Amino acid sequence: MKDVNRNALIGLLRMVALLPALIFIPAWTLQYWQAWVCLCAFFVPVAIITAYLMRANPALLARRLKAGAKAETKKTQKMIQSFAAILFLAIFVVPTLDHRFRWSSVPVAVELGGDVLIVSGFAVVLWVFTVNSFTSGVIEVNPEQKVITSGPYAIVRHPMYLGSLVMLLGIPLSLGSWWGLTAVALMTTVIVLRLLDEEKFLRENLMGYKEYAKRVHHRLAPFVW
Image 1 (cartoon, rainbow, N blue to C red):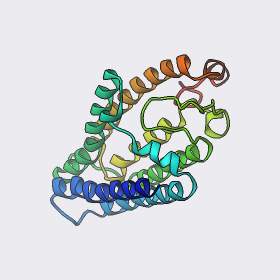
Image 2: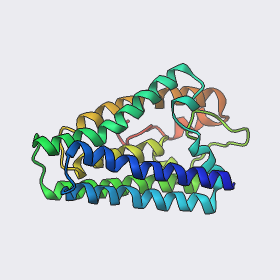
Image 3: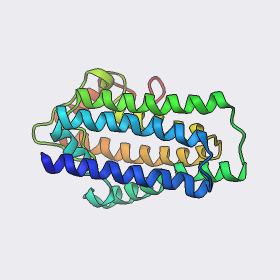
Image 4: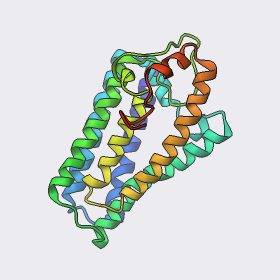
């Protein structure tokens, strides 16, 4: 598991280098307090979750590291993940361009609310990890995998995606941008497409999933869909 921990740390360090660059280069200033707070709200939970998985569930960490378009086996998912990667970058870049050229005027309370959404989204993700050790970064079914019905899975069938969307929604608000929400809207569409394809796969390959889907009616948004 040393290799897993090393790869996780390398990935975290790459993100620490990439995201500030995506923010401060387009903004062309370091005097952007919203960005500093946003980065703290993002990286502190990421570091906590990474440390938790290193200690409590290295196997899950290894599954999470196997992600992205290259890791997928289906052509459809490769395309979806490629679009998702581009939109993830856009969720940071568009708000910083917005900040630089003053396209939006976002109240401070909303910006701080965005930080709360980022942390809250990661909290949901951590909750998922504590109850489901088979949360993979790609669409697959482990031979030992069982349907999880407790915790957040008693509320929606895909709480990992829900937490991720809450976190992503918070980023443009935290950075002081209304226009950044357009990238989040597009990302939501991509996640829904991935989710529907994943559900089809799970119904066909994970024993008990069809029965679970009949009990838990909402896929992503509680009481909505």
